[in-house]
Length: 312
Image (cartoon, rainbow, N blue to C red):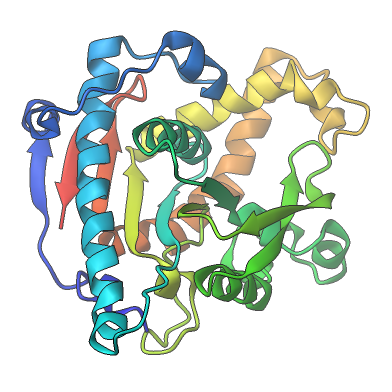
């Protein structure tokens, strides 16, 4: 059990607005150019101006730096007592939230700002989509309409990989291919990163036995939940679906090629149906309930800007 993380579970949140949050960056100034950030953005997201970007991410970097330093001290206590050299395991940041909330974009940007702040650190992203069972398995077990739900993940595989990573050992993780809607044939090598960003729908979900190493949350040292209203989440999903229709759906290998020729009206109706029957249901039943296990909840506004912060 990760007692360092679980000690936060019963603490209350401190609510901060944009101004209050921005004042907490102290002297940290993220000197990042538009050219560095633009390629990291998702279909629905626009570049924040330099001031707004710094006000959002600089306080987060400061907070994570404090957390990381405390983590290193805590993990050094026993080795120091035993007069041994401390081997610090990877610091794992969990990032979760609904489909379409922008988890992947946020994780990519967070990785970039942390790489700039820690130029000598190795930082990697692990997306749990790769641990969804292969498409053939989902079809054979009548789980295709439950894709993204807890039962669609090969959780023992995920826990095995996380255990290797946390132990400082080399691990290989499956990669999800959004074109084929299936696992890719390639594997992601994860070899002793200083920081790992673990991103996915199921990052803070538990199996009902929080005292055992039975869930991804047990490996996480700091957890971030990206939040938005259900209306915005649906709107962003529909917009993303229509963007894919004009881009990746046209790929000959795309699982969703059948949707490439839909009209705007047909695409919107299909996206709404998928959202309501699958993603909204999964969000209400399995994702949103994990919000209060996070250390930090970041609420996003209509332009994907950060509008509120809840911190334990």
